[in-house]
Image 1 (cartoon, rainbow, N blue to C red):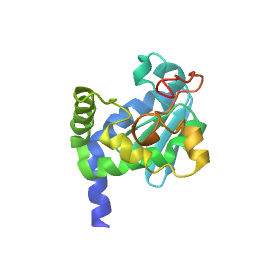
Image 2 (cartoon, rainbow, N blue to C red):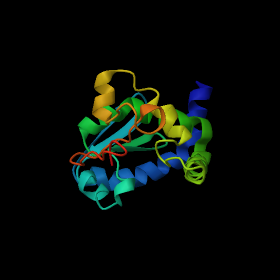
Image 3 (tube, rainbow, N blue to C red):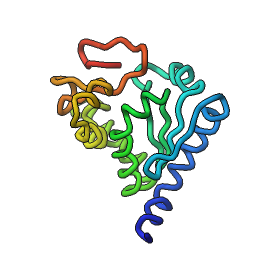
Image 4 (spheres, one colour):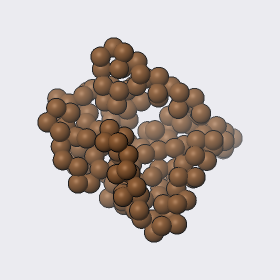
Length: 166
């Protein structure tokens, strides 16, 4: 019990960032649910808002501590296993997750790798996709990026032949 509480406390600053981002999504028609101790917020205008991001930064779902934001319920369901790996990473690293994730991406760029597909944290999270249905829903295909992983796509994004997805 004490360890469980500590995990929430340790990840709380990142969860606070997630809550700040979740509030406008929820207020603009998004839904919220608690799944396995994690707040999932999806739908509303989030799908439209994330399209304002540059193409490489678009997402189907994204995690901040114990808060997962998804463009819709389908994305939250399809990405759940992957995003819950990130929740565990936040529980282990707390706020250190932010600079370590960025550092892993920068290191991949320096060594000629892909900053997302070859990122240590993404490789760990993609490693949990074991069923063909989950892999297909998440846009994972063989031969792309690290360990055959392909980044999750936003609905409506066309696949990119070189990387598998946007």
